[in-house]
Image (cartoon, rainbow, N blue to C red):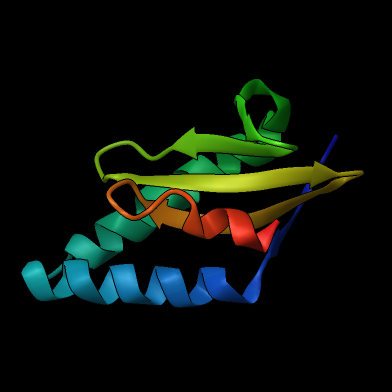
Length: 98
């Protein structure tokens, strides 16, 4: 089954912020970050139920190389990404988006 990715508005802001931070640390690192995010999103779309449920119906997939995780829910044929979240941020703050 092919799943369609849907992003909550906050996710775009989180990605932009993280990209800019990494790019300011080292040129090209922001692109590496986005490539890792793209890889994990592709894996999620292929097998969304393979990642653990961490809160209600929200699942989490940890990003390799960067301290981020993708939080999402499955609704029929859609994968709704609720957050792409740095692991050192308060984990309670993404829960208000559910």
